[in-house]
Length: 301
Image 1 (cartoon, rainbow, N blue to C red):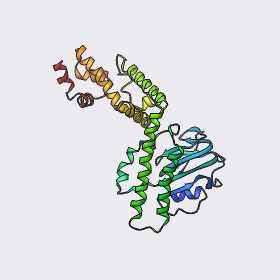
Image 2: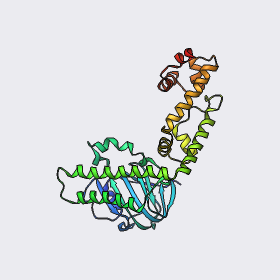
Image 3: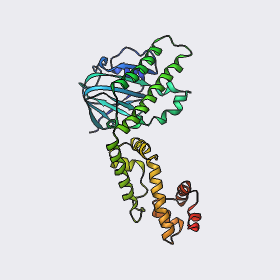
């Protein structure tokens, strides 16, 4: 039997679930996790689907679920969730320390940060790809969160939203920096993952034909490596300068070149053999990587 979902759509709903006083701002809240009560939690473990962004700094003992999976945490880690993602916790989980920052997408309406949120891809990472932070990094993030809380706790004026959002953007930019640091300090396992990906990629395109299996997508390789699609792309981009999709397209073009050089098959036949349903899509991808259409490229070689 699948675990039920309970939708928590607003910051006010979240405070009610946690048995906290009403929020001081309808679109953003900063909570100490030790102060959260689970009296309103269902007796059976339940997944909560949040209608807003959440950033958790957890120092806890126990397990926490994301989607249908569970992960153990026994040290300070940062976990990010985006609107629509599911979060579940054990009713009697033990928090040693930590905080949660929650902000609704409406807070970012007509702001520069709202237009850039897609760039913070760690909101799409899995929980086992959480960010591990040092004590100094924790203090830096805490200062940003405290500044936000101080601002929304005062009487709101025309400057309030800008100051809150600016501190939020600063916090997220620090998180991006700390993830870059984590990728680099964990270079050996990261490089191993890059090599595993390259091996999977070469193996997939070594098939004589992709008609049956079709073109692979980013999720295919991510699932084979037990990673989220965004984490894999960010990892590859940091170590190779190319995203997962760019790697797939480059390998595809290499195979296409071999078929254009070494066979008499027409462009449509090559497109179908490479897993494309429509030759025009193949031509578009090929030209974007080589600057020439498949027909022009064949004539040059």
